[in-house]
Length: 496
Ligand code: KG4
Ligand code: ZN
Image 1: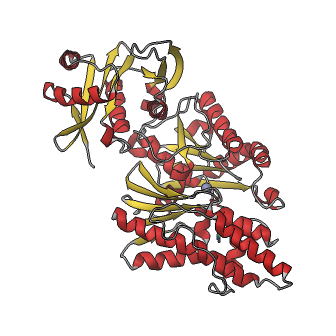
Image 2 (image 1 turned 120 degrees about the vertical axis):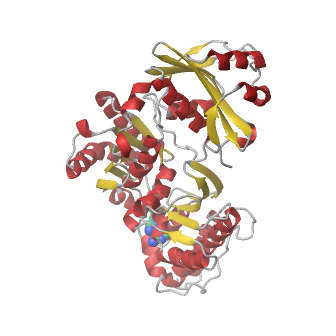
Image 3 (image 1 turned 90 degrees about the vertical axis):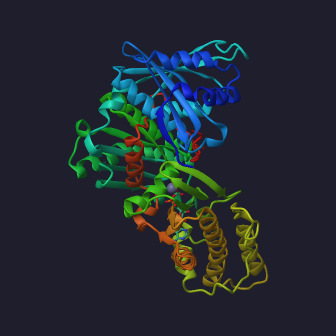
């Protein structure tokens, strides 16, 4: 679907009213819309149209220096395509032109997706109006935000300087980027050694190590970039998904900097960051594309039909791919992280030696399941031990790796074909796996689809990719309020 925005006219009112009626329990009348549209000066009303069909609409009223968002709605079947965000962006820009320096609105307490959208545009909840909605006596959340931060945050032609922070898992990272193209520094303080003896990331250790490392990582990133806090235009931070105790450290730090300096805060979804590692490595990569995100924490196939729009096609139902590598390596007593160790051993083994299950290979959907495979590898090791046989570790590693890779490749190719894309992106720590890269490259090439894989340093967690995604969010005016929180299960698919 493609859509464009234009001012609302009287001719749109029937279509607007139909949407209004379908989604709101206490809809505005046609007369109210007609009156609003005819006021002019203190109002801005617009519609989003797909061809000649109205798919969304919204309006603001500006009184003095305050803009009130009066209405914002997207037709049910046009959601998750960025229509709401694009209309809001345009309305807030009009508000600034009309002299407003702040914006406010009321939203139903239960409408969390709308609140999330407003938060992305820098509005924070500042109170409630108890029982505001007459139909259900539901409370209204009052949201408020400063529009001048947005305004200040649009340097000419995207030359903005962003400091980005990443702390969602076991890497404390900071990077400085100018204008989305010039990476001035990228510092990664890895905690991997502290987790190694436990064979996996220990959340409590992760939070403590982030706390210890974050100040030095940021200082180092600023120093390498040759800039100070005073030179920055925005501060960006990963606010989910990830380990809550780890995310909180980055988010609290970034909010502190934003509060102390007055800089706008840009929130980045960690998974969006992994996808943007591809654009960072190769600026010609652009949607439509399908991405496979595979790391120690996630395994998902995502369709990105256009900038900022994501549809998760399928995810793992249990273990993530990297986690399976880590657990198998642990069972073999090989150390942590398991992926690099096992893939090195696999290169010397025979991948047809042991026939491990290819879970969900023919399930017809895009879901993954890796815990059954892990269990059968562990059983294989146990059975060998009990029978006094020695396990051929390279053969086992190669056979296990092939079972993981075959399923990923088969689903990846089917997703790319079904979505009709010509570009496929690989992202996350497991993208370092040579067999996955090679088999995926070949399978996609057979269908004329190009594979983008960032260099290793950008595949594993880093803040450069967060800075790249933050540039995109920044240019769209997507900011977080200072009441933003870490969201450990943050979704990539946006509602608006
Ligand atoms: O993206 P990342 O640095 O952190 C997370 O967000 O999880 O990914 C780390 C994961 C670990 O599970 C590690 O074992 C896996 O990526 N990994 C690999 C390879 N290199 C790293 N898995 C398979 N083969 C590799 N060569
Ligand atoms: Zn990651």
